[in-house]
Image: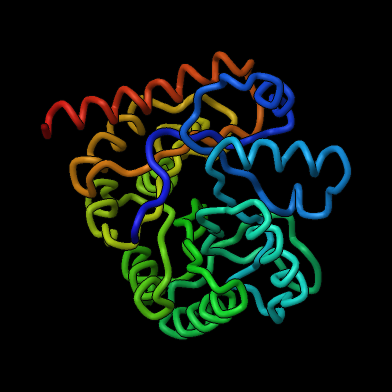
Length: 276
């Protein structure tokens, strides 16, 4: 996928929104927001978000599109979302390759069964989303704790959806590592099997070590050393990709978060130095 962002980004949270807003010299290459958290805000908050989206490149990572769910797509929401993405000149819009709804919203991201039937179903829904939004959708490889089906491997399922839907990929490095431990596969092999040309950007996040063979994707911890190593390997395989730090819980002061963003920048500079 052609890149229109670069460098190191940060997931924008209310905890430090004002701190970034009031510091015009804050240094970050791009910011990410969940559109559901901002879509219907007008007035002061709406204007302040627009101030930031005029100042920094923005990407959006959705929470509720429910790509794998049984309910019809919420097309009214998608038309509303389209206006928001256009208003804030959002460069990429991504969503989880999962489902989160049935008769109502389940408030969790659940894995889609890895079957050929599910590939066709999800790909059709992704194509419909892209038609409405008139832009590519990026899908994220998600963490999961029960294997929903063994008809296809996760690698086969993700690649089949990407190909049939002709969409982008937002590659979550931490999710690869977490799933590799929980389900006993090789993280490097999974990462290397992802199609470079479809990658829009990368996610980095922390997880909780429940046990040696069980990792919980919390987004509430600092990034672990093994995930930093996997990021280096990802750059080696896929080249220098825009990379964003996610932190959703136990959010530390902004300067502490920016130390991890600096680690992303250091990894990117190390790749540049090695490939000049």
